[in-house]
Image (cartoon, rainbow, N blue to C red; front, side, top):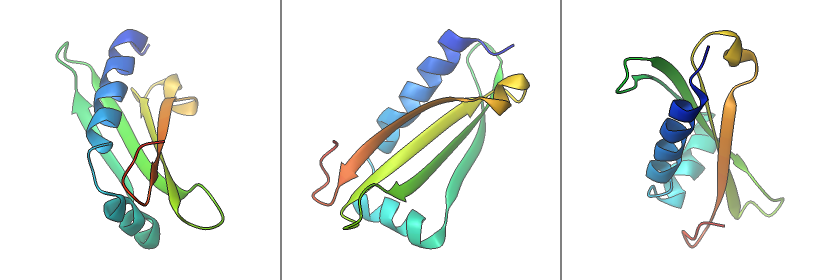
Length: 94
């Protein structure tokens, strides 16, 4: 069973890191249909899968929504913990 407190911390750390990336990188993710997937090991030794994906958040294609999910490969993978943020063309986080 997934340690929700630990997973939430890892998810927040990932989101914080992604928010430092430029808008242009996420625009490239969209055009390349890129999904960033990685497996990490927590300080406690637990293994987690983290996936990050970028999608257009508006019809004018000026705001990008970045969605991040985490699971431990158990039943939680059917309903992963998620977080997201929006980044505007000027780089501001919405």
